[in-house]
Each structure stands twice: as C-alpha cells, then as structure tokens.
Length: 116
Length: 114
Image (cartoon, rainbow over all chains, first blue to last red; front, side, top):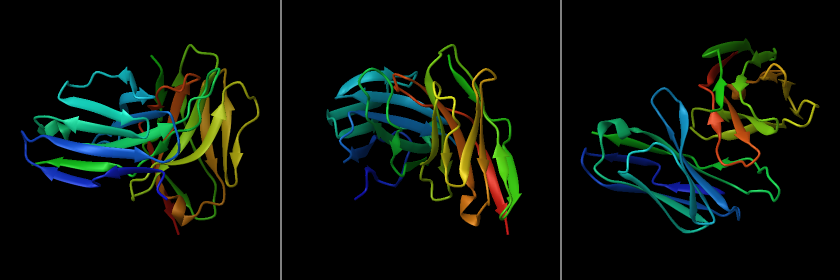
C-alpha cells in the first residue's frame, strides 16, 4: 500500500559507474519530483515532471537524466558517478489544483547512494 | 528567489514539555503555502502541518500548531506535550501557489529527553 515507492533503498557503487533509481506512485498524482539531500541534510529540488513533461530542471549536471514513462513513474539515471553524488535521493509526488495551489508533496523513503 | 531559514540547528525538550521551532522565509509573493516536515532516523519525510498564506487562522494538528506571522514572514512550529517519538529533524518548507517545488530550510534537530 506504499504511496510513493523508490528502489533501491541503498545503492553502493564505484566511481565512474552508471546507475538508476526508480520511483513509482500509486496516488494518482500528476506531478513528480526528485530531491537531493546532502551530507548536511540539506534538501534541494533537482527535477519536476507534470504529466510526463519536464517543468523544473535545476542546475544539475547533465550526468543526471530523469525519465518519466508515464505520470505514475519518474526514474533517475546517473552516468559516470562521482564521489560528490553520494547523498540521499528522494522522490515525491503531488496533485496540482486547478486555479493554482497544490496538495502537499508525498515523499518516498529515499535512496541512499554511496560512491566508493 | 525564495529562501527559508531555520536559525536553530539543534533544540532539546523534556518529555511532556512544549517546544517551539523557528522558521523565517523571504518571498515577494502574496499567496503561497508553508509546511513543516518531520524526518525521523528512519529517513522518511512526514508532513506535520500545512499553512496557506491567505488564511489568517493558524493551522493546528493535534499537539502541533503554528504561529504564522505573514508581515514578519515568520512560521514557527509549537509542539505541545512532547513525546519521545517527536525526536527527529524538522524542516520548514515553502512553495508558491503553483506548487512546482518545495524550498526547504536547513532543518532543526529536535531531541526529546525522558
């Protein structure tokens, strides 16, 4: 019954590898997000998709590429992993409201990515 | 750009006592939303409370309430009758009415002492 699920929960890999994190939501929301939480616990938006369309693309290296095959899924692919990519990555979703405003964002449990 | 500031990196409270966590923000918008999220050691991000800027009444959820001062751009969280399970990192967050992104503060680590 998990609302926003991310896989894997933990990812340990070597520098230079390519990896993907998957995210799925069963809430029927139309907007999904990726956030990065660094070692100091600071959370920052990376990407946002609304109905499979990219609407936010923060200053993120182009080694990071989000993909949304449908509005219930938003995956994050990372090429040529670097030490600085070590962080917790959170997926979230929300429902936009006609006329402005949105319901609160629901978060997945996060994926801890560790680069050796 | 909008910014959110939490000036208390750490706070502690005795079980059953009351504690207030501070948050200030900066925006040129007149309508927006503010949130408090809780992140326990399990790493989950849990919504605690939500405030809409156009509503003057302070939001309340059981033991959690906010003091929303729009003119001062202040949004503090009060936790009454603190419980051990309240121990967590608390994040203040802001979003515009378009709701396209959350801007987070740096977080406040709350310890609850038995």
